[in-house]
Amino acid sequence: MSSSSIDKAALAHLAKLARIELDAAEEERLLADLGNILEHFKVLAELDTSDVLPMAGGTDLMNVLRNDDARENTDRGDGVEAFPKSQDGYLKVPSVFDR
Amino acid sequence: MDTPNTLTIKDFHKRLLNKEFSAREAADACFKEIAARDGDIGAYLSIAEDSAREAADAVDNAVAKGDPLGALAGVPLGIKDAILVKGLPATAASKVLEHYVASYDATAIKKLKDERAVFLGKANMDEFAMGSSNENSAFKPVRNPHDLTRVPGGSSGGSAAAVAADMAVATLGSDTFGSIRIPAAFCGVVGLKPTYGAVSRAGLIAMTSSLDQIGPITKTVEDSAILFKAIAGADPQDATSANAPRAGVPQERAMKDFTIGLPEEYFVGGLAPLVERETEAAIARLTKLGARFKKVSLPHTKYAVPAYYLSMPAEVSSNLARFDGIRYGGDRPEDARNLMEVYLKTRAKFGAEAKRRIILGTFVLSSGYYDAYYEKAQRVRTLVKQDFDNAFEDVDVMLTPVSPTPAFTLGEKSADPLAMYLSDVFTGPANLAGVCAIALPTKPGTARAEGELPVGFQLIGKKWHEDDLFAIGSRYENDMA
Image (cartoon, rainbow over all chains, first blue to last red; front, top):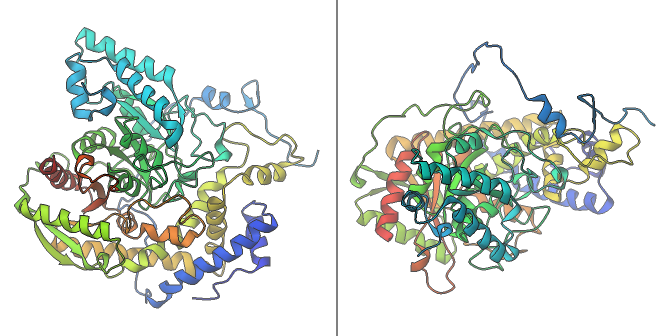
């Protein structure tokens, strides 16, 4: 297995991708925890898995298709009601660009 | 007379129909117990007195009219807060969902509403089902009803504690790597992790979609079977769900027809003396009842936890990406100047374990590491599953401990995520393999010495063979009674 450490710059990049802001204490804690976890779980490298197919799901089902029937999809009223701000049945969200 | 909250589902039904109490009185008995004890235990995040009483009154009207009622009619249930009940909060014990109210019912809940069950409230848990001790709830930890200095296990800790403390007749939890079975064992109750696909996950807030299953936590194995059968079945809303291919096959097997495997990798030392002693006693009792035991091998056992903790975070990082401060109600930060700030301020509210898993998941999925970590872990998952396929050639079920220790004290493992991860070593492989497994107490509370903690043992069955677990478990339980 390749390098199993995450350095400070890599962590900052991952946090940015995950849209999570970390303070200095969280950063330090995460660097230590992730280092430990990856180090401990390096044990997987000792297994030869070149002839083993990856198992991505928990089921043997294939091609699960629903009937192609027209139907009411969701109750828009409940979804809109649960939303903090709405107007005329539309959802109001913050602006994408700086105000 | 026993108050209704202390009864099993089976006795509850009989006495309800006999009019020994009303469904309304039963719900109130639970709320009374919650008021008396839950301040110390913390099993519930919210209670739903009005809707519960309304549902109970409807059942009482049906009883008065002599309408036919199923075994779950009027039965007061607690529901893990990751499972959606329309009109009730569903926080998954996270600040990110603090003000979210479910706008629809999970399929399992719909089925229970058809059975006219009564929902008391939403049970505490580890945030987004991430944890083995229930210390990761963003709101409050759950304490073990048998010893308030100890954890109830996690992540469905509130669901297990509520049953153990008679604050519900039964509950639903969810299990990704042991989250039903560990708390059931720590609290001295019965917890079933059904076969992957047996119960629809529609309306379960997803943690690891390739492993998550909803299942019952109950006082007896018989109750587990009743509740499981009510929530099982294929659902168009969950493409991984299916009907049991064995449905309708008579499963009346004598104990002597069962060969039970003992996986040698699960008995290699490191067990707490109490767990070792109780597991041996359970094996001896089943032998006396006629079961045959046989040693089997699951050679990739030690790789199961690493494979899980390198693949699960990938699914977590993807599943938790949807919590963006826009969807799922409430708390949009008012001071955000743009969309990016909405994301960042919202996601800052994830707890430490959620952040750890999201970051680790982002890492294992990133270019250059995907093959070494994520895909490698998935290949190892195949090997773990093949171990089970091979072992089940020789035996019908397997018996193992649930956890290497009984309930530990609060704070004992919470500082070290790795130590916490390793407490799932006996439960997780069944999830990776997709098979069913049940945790049940080695002995009832009345047979435990003063101050002795509950210990559970685990029966692991073949896919779709929940009936085998129920058959063996209920005979064991009846023999102990």
